[in-house]
Amino acid sequence: MENAFEVLQERGFIEQMTHPEEIEELFKKEKITFYIGFDPTADSLHVGHFLTVMAMSHMQRCGHRPICLMGGGTGMVGDPTGKTDMRRMMTVEEIDHNVECFKKQLSRFIDFSDDKAIIVNNADWLRNLNYIEFLREIGSVFSVNKMLTAECFKTRMEKGLSFLEFNYMIMQSYDFLELNRRFGCVMQLGGNDQWSNILGGVDLIRRKENKPAYGMTFQLLTNSEGKKMGKTEKGAVWLDPEKTSPYEFYQYWRNVGDKDVEKCLRLLTFLPMDEVKRLGALEGSEINKAKEVLAYELTKIVHGEEEAKKADKAAKALFMGGSEGGSIPTTKVKAADLENMDILGALVLTGLTPSRSEARRAVQQGGVKLNDEKVDDIAFKITEDVFKDGIITIQRGKKSFHRLKLV
Image 1: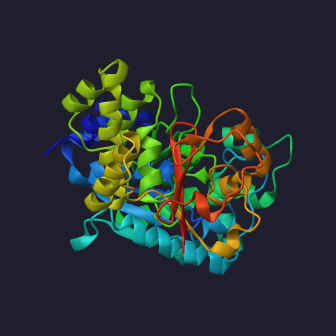
Image 2: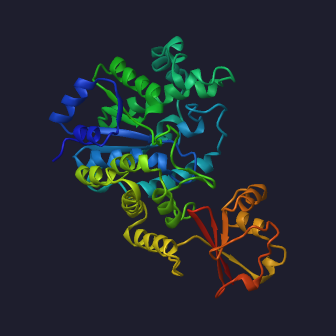
Image 3: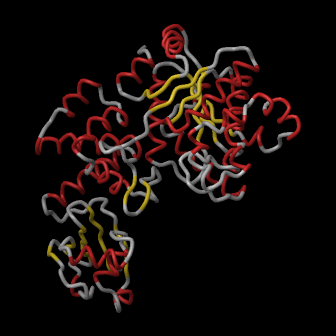
C-alpha cells in the first residue's frame, strides 16, 4: 500500500505541517485517524471543498481512517477566516438541513463501511456546553495576545471582530480535543486558511492530554494568477447537480487556463502522475485534449460515468456545430412567456448574464449568438419563429451555451 505522505507530497497537496519530521515518520510506521471539518454554510459542497475531499480519499486509499466532522455547532458561530464582514447567522433548521446534504454528498467519495470512515457532528458536544466549565477547562489555555496575531483575526480588526467570532478558534480547537478523546484522532487536515485554527487544536491536545497531535494544511485551489478557482458569473461551482448541472460542471473544467491544467489533474483526479505529467506537457492546441481528460475525469468522480459521457458528448457536439445537445443546460418556456422577451431578457433568464446591463454589453461587443448566428441588435425579439423544432441555442462568448425549449 502506498505511503500517504508521499502521495500527497508528489501530487502537490501539502502546504504546511506542524511537525514535518514527526509527521513523515508517523506515516511510515502506522495508520492514523485524522479529520477534516466542514461548516455547513450552504446546502451543497463546492469545488473548494472538493480539493480537501480528494486529499481525504487519497489518505483513505492508503489505509488511514478519515473523520468527516460536520460543523453543526461551529456553523452557529461562523468562521471569520477570509471574511471582511461577519457571516450571516443561520437558523438551527438551516444548519441541520445543510449538514444532511453534506453527509449525502460525502458518502459518494468516502467509504464509510466497516468503520473505514466516520461522520460526526460537533453539535453533539458544542450546542450544550456548560459555559463556565468550558472557560475553565479550555479558555484558560488560550492566550488572547497570541490569538490576535492569527491571520484569521488580523484581517477583521479594522472593521470589527465580534466576541461571537472570536470564540471560533477555541471551538475548533476543542473539536480536535474531543475527537482525540473519543476516536484517537491525531491529525487535523484543512485548507491553508485554517492554519491558525489547526495550530490551536494541536497545542490544546499537547498541553491538556500530554500526547502528540499534528496538523497539515493544503494549498487552496487557485489559478496561475493566484485567484481562487471555482467561481463563475452565476456563482460557485457546486457539487450538487441541481445547483451546477453536470454539463456546466464539465464545461468549467474544459475551459480552465492552459497553465492550470496539470495542477488540476494532480489535485482533482486519480490519474497516475506519469499520465498527469504527460498531459500537462502538451502544448498549443494539443492542451485541449488534456482539458477534455480533466473535465471528463472530474465529472466522472463527482457525477458518475454516465453523466460524464453525456456532458462530453454534448460539448463535442456543440464544438462541431452538431445538433445533438446531450446535457446542455435547458430552460423551458411557454409561448405566452415570449410576449415581451428580447435577447437581453433571454440572456438573463438563462443565466448567461447576471443582468440586462451586462447582457447589453455582451451583445454590443459581438459576443452573443442565437442558433449560431451573431446577434448585434439589443432589441432583438425572441418569437416562436426563432425556434427550430421547438428549441433555440443561445451562446455567450466561446464557451457558454444555454437552450430555450418551447413547451
